[in-house]
Length: 601
Image 1 (spheres, rainbow, N blue to C red):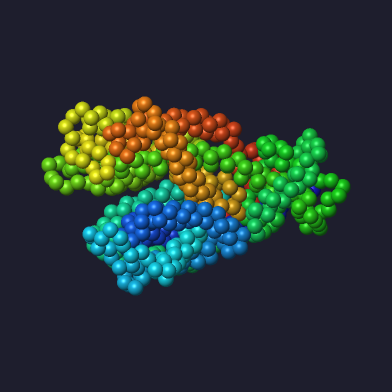
Image 2 (cartoon, helix red, strand yellow; image 1 turned 120 degrees about the vertical axis):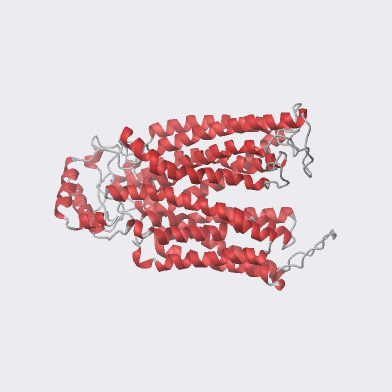
C-alpha cells in the first residue's frame, strides 16, 4: 500500500476517534426536534392547503390570480430548499439554519394572521350579490407578499435540514445508533402525517367556518411554540458545523477529470490513485468502486502535480483524491433512483387531486343522516392508513423480517421502494375499476342529485374510495419513507441537507410532469370519438382510462427502477482492506470513549 494511503488511513482514524468523543443524546434529543416538527407542520400545512380559499374570499382575488400565486409560492418553497441546503452545508450548519428559518416562519405566519385580523390590511368584504369586488391595494398586496416571503425563507431552511438534523443526534458508528436513525425516519413521517391530519380537519374548519383571523392566529401561535421547543433543547443537540462547500469538491473532480481525459487509468487504481482525506472532513472513508471509471482520471498523479507536506494536493483543481471521486460517484448513482421517484409521485398527485372530483359526484351521505362528508376530506383516509401502518411496520414487521433476512432494517431501502411502487400500481388499477363502477351506476341507475358545474351524482357510495386511499397510504409509507432514508444515507455526510432537498425538488418536478400529462391527455382525447377522458363531468369523462394509463406508466417506471436498483451499489459496500479492518479493531480496543458514546443512544 502506498504511503499516501497509509497516511490518509491514520488521519481518518484520528477523525473517527474525535467523532466517538461526541456525546450523542439519541432519543433524549428527539422530543425537542419532533415537537418542533409537529408544531411547525400544524402551523403551516393547514394554512397552505387552504390558501387558495383565503386569497379568493378575503383578498377577493380571481381564481386564476390566486392559483398562480399559490403555484408560485409552492414552487419557490420547494426549489428554495436547494438554496437552503447549499447555505446550510456550506456556511451555517443545520442548527443555525433551522434557528433562522424557524423565526422566519413565525414572522410569515404573523404577517398572514395580521392580514386577516386588521381590516386595513385586506380589501373590504365582497357583497353577496355584487358582481365585482374590490381587490387588494398595492400596500395590502405588498404586506401579503412579505408574509409569503418569510414563509419561503422558512421552508427553504426547515425542509432540507430538519430531518438530517434529527438523524445527526444518533451515533452512526453503533448498532443502536443506526437503528435509532432508522426508527427516527419512520416516526418523523408519522408525526408529519398526524400533524397534516389535524391541520386539514381542525384548523381548516376554524378558518373556513368560524373566523379567518382566529384560524390564522392559531397556526401562528403553534409556529411560535415550534420555535420554543427547538431552542429549549439547544443543550441536548449534536451540532455539526460545515467544512466548506461540497459543490466545490464536485466541480474540482469534473474539471480535473476533463483535463486528464486523455490519460490511461492504472491497472490497479485502488493502489495507484491519489488518496487523501482531510482530518477535518466529516465524511466517512469510501472504498474504491469500478463504476464511472472516467471520473477516476481526476486522481491520477502526473509529473506536473504537486503534493503539500500534509499530503494534500497543491492544486485541487488539477488533482483530486480518490475520496473526492467516490463522493461524487455517490451523488451520480443516486440520480437515476431519484428520477424513478419523480415518476412515482405522479400516483400521489393524481389520486389526491381527482379523488376529490370523484367524491363530488358520488354519494357522500353517512348512513341515513343528512350529513355529508366533504369531498376534500376523503384524503384523510390516506393519511389515516399511513398513520396506522407506520407503527405496525416499525414495531411488528421489521423485527419479523430482520429474523428472516438478517438485514438490520428487515429489507433494504431499495426493496422497500420497489414494493411501494408495486402497491402504487395496484392502487391505480383499483382506482380505475372503482371509477368505472361509479360511472356505470351514474349512467344506468337513478342518481341522487346534480353537482354544480359538474353533472349528475352517482348513487354509489363514496366509501368505496376508501380502499384505494388506504392502499395509497401504505404505498407512500413504503416508498417515501424509504426515499428519505435512502437520500440521507447515500449522499456524502457533508451533503445531507442537499439530500433533504431532493425529496421536495422531486415533488416540484412531479407537479410539472403531472400538468404535462394532463395537458397532453386533454388535447389528444377532447376531439376523440370516445369523448374527453378528463371532461369536467366525470360521467362523460373516462377517468378510469386515465388511471389505467398512469398504472401503465408506473409499470414502465418499475421496470426502469429494477434496472437501476440492480445496478446500484450502496455507499461503502465494497469490501474493506485488511489494513482498514485492523485499524478499526485497534481503534475500538484503544478508545475508552466508544462504550460511553454507545450508551448514549
